[in-house]
Image (cartoon, rainbow, N blue to C red; front, side, top):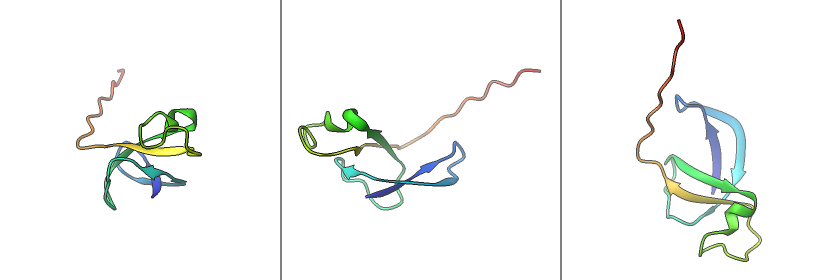
Length: 69
């Protein structure tokens, strides 16, 4: 799948990555992507020539911002 990075407010960035989908994510879902040697640690991608893998679908994202006054 083609995935795009997001800001914490879900605004898409321009950067894209081609990733193997190991969890059955759908178009438009927010996912967690592992890259490099970590991408080859799933049972689906073990010993395969993979550089990026979708390893989780994000259901909810909580962001806490510590503001100093």
